[in-house]
Image (cartoon, rainbow, N blue to C red):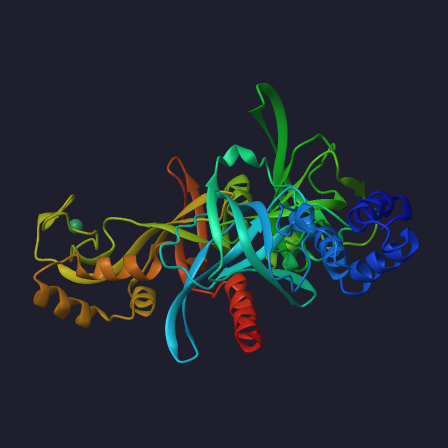
Length: 439
Ligand SMILES: [Zn+2]
């Protein structure tokens, strides 16, 4: 902190302490609390006043602060923030089962991870703006962690209290596209623009052109949105500095506006073709290309559609029967099969998935024979569809297959599918173990 920045605070402390301490001594002490103990400025001021017997009532700890001002290991923190993500998890702590919540909060200065240890009656959702009193903080891997313990008081605020969260301060972190995660603050990435599209939106009553598309390096691809005109050209290799990362259901997206620096880089870089071949594609990219063979996409299963689970097929043409009737061969004696029809969305677009018997058995954990037996027992043909629904809906899934594009949009005949564990959760779980150990 600059000297001139500290002067008014030193004077304020001096007034509260009378003649007890010279301004020089106050400044020295304030500096120690800020720089050595890493207390926040309000906490440091209060501590000094109290320590020297002054009246600290005007220095109440726990007035609202910006998230970027909050330091590790503070016992009592107040702030207003927006919940950027909220997840629930059952854990066993000290031999007892309990439900905790965790995610990210943000304000205009930064974002921080949060964990709530007492969740009874707590109804926090993504998008809520909350004013918080009595949180405490810890440090994990150099980052402040906000905890809601049993002294917490949370009030929901009008969401307009906080504008768009621009996670923004300090120098940007230089990362690869594969490393992008929500809540990183400013980032700098280098990549080739695989697609660029323009869109007209209305922002604050004014028509505005925004630019979106896919940017890629050897480690991955990401959907981006540019809120001002950087003359982006498909195929260019660009360095984007001071971009921010937002996540759509856990899938990172890159955002940048007029505050960002963008330079076109002239150096050796994998070609668009090489980048398209390797790794996974964004759905918007497949749509722009009009389909693809052997593409891999990762997204969220937003719907397991009707016609999933057990179906009866026509022995002549293999079409699924509707109430025992084939639309070509009429009423026939069908044979049973298993399949999934689902919609997968990665935040850039959606693709309709068709998954055959073998993969459906693996994903649902049920064979065709077991499914038939369960349906008979329950006297309900939809019992397998319900199981699939429970296993897949709102889960992140990675799928590979051929994608075609027609008047109904994109569809993929899935050859392989995986339900990867989301890394955000793994990181949060790791963090919780550490916190539990330090309690
Ligand atoms: Zn038929």
